[in-house]
Image (cartoon, rainbow, N blue to C red; front, side, top):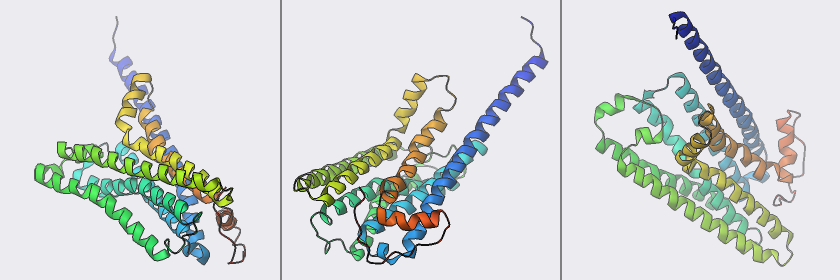
Length: 315
């Protein structure tokens, strides 16, 4: 077989161009999707801030907290996605600044959905509005962040106790398992994931069956609440894909060994899709919120809707 350096260089150039085009295409796609979703979410936050009727309703406060949480999580995850393509590795200390808020916000999502389900199950069909006050809602949001922090902050202490100081100045591929690589951290991570998911799913099952029996009385609000709980379950399923990412990666690699977009596909499934579903499931389905939101989204100005409009559960 004849071998010439020229042919080898040409092949390398073609492969490099292929890789470059794939990287640029993936990054552009992710950035465009991120900007689009964050624009929709930012418009929802603006709509919430402009109208007092949303600020005094527990359901909307929890929803906007979920939206803001998703915006933070999406911005950080896209930044890390771009960094991994651009620099491949970054310093551990810098990686921690991105990884920690990303983990916080990822853990917050299922907890926020669980508390939203509790509100729908208790405060609406049973008319226990005196329980779900605005003050208590903000306390719940504080509890959500505290629970997420307690599941992550021990990793910092484990890192400082088990790794040499030189490790903080070394460069790694910026992933949670690359930074918090101690056996203790890995076991604690798996335990916290299982605990969070069990608590959230038990909450969703409890609220669904509570509403199911209330709906037998043909109460329209209870039936709508039941549909919303089912959609919450779908959102939690999407959130769970982050927890099974290593197994999902192995499965896709086994099924499609020649597919070059596996990491890109996993990123879309784990990070983009759940953030895209949230505003549709809980924001655009609400008739009252949608009336205001469409005006700001299309930049046509606010519509004067009477402040005493009845707030109803989305159908």
